[in-house]
Length: 231
Image 1: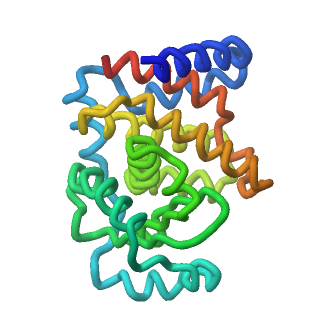
Image 2 (image 1 turned 90 degrees about the horizontal axis):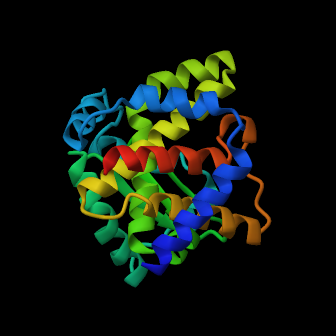
């Protein structure tokens, strides 16, 4: 209960300070994901084309990872088993159990991505520092990109930074909806985002082009409004 109250207070403060920060991005993302019951939103989002490959693509995809990532792979141990148990329900919910390969590796920065549509790459810094449901939310967000691949390609082609931000928020919606469907608190995704920010700030990371990503305040505003739709 204390964590929930603290998060609500944090969201309210962020909203107060950033209520006028590109509200169109939040509104457009909410329009895209739609409204209705949880079941209706599940049908709407989960019926979108899901761009992934399959098991035969694992090996060449892993071989194409940067050498620094390949050399740091973690192939056994308690952390790997924990991550496997966390991501399994997420992947099963999206019906892609046999199409995603986990690749856990050592890195001081918080990293997660779906590489070439079939390899879920997660750094140990991310996996070790986040709570289970927070990590599940981050994984669901990364898988969410497969639903919006066409929009992402178009946005990158035209250098449309606003469209890229909208895609990120839509992937946040996938993450929160996933947590809700799994019986977890959808707000854990935002907690995970804050955790990623804190890890990278501590380690001095500046790895992304901020023009393509919504601010933490915009994500807070989106999270608060979308969670109300899930209630």
